[in-house]
Length: 196
Image (cartoon, rainbow, N blue to C red; front, side):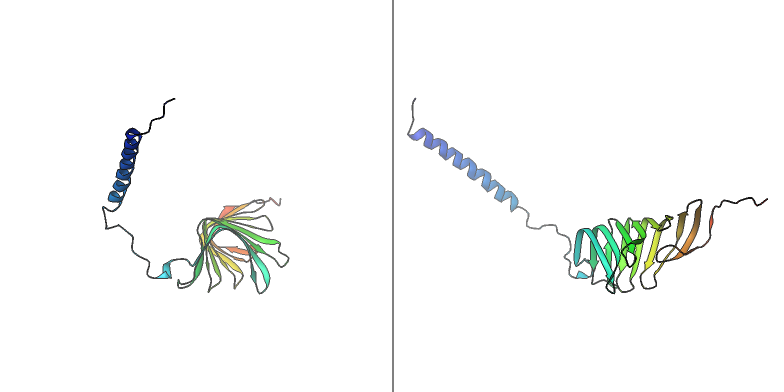
């Protein structure tokens, strides 16, 4: 086994050091080439940005010390500086309205929901589906839930599937648990029994 010491290994180290220095300096030269970076405009007002963004939401909400709502959402944003302030649930929402014993009175799902804090109004949009304790199913593209008046309403096309019939209408008004409702501009298939 021969061990070489002398000018040859030293020369190899010098070549390697020179190569590494050349590569590192080329990175610095390339990174400093363009001083004008293209940036978007700075956000100078927080009016249009959320103060809080929460992901993976599963919460209970109370009114006057009584738990009234169970909300599940992928993302929940709060815009406190908007006029009026509101909550945004734009990646889907599952909402249960609960009675005083925390049993579901109605269940709602939608692709998007907004909750207006000042007016205590839920605005559910796109593929809205609701169910009541009588197992009736409500499908529409827009639904409002007014917490103050304990009412739900829509001016959109609504389809209500009951046990033995399907009712379609344009607009409806209901109590907060969807058990007493009025449908406007109704159409549908209704079974008729012959009394002869």
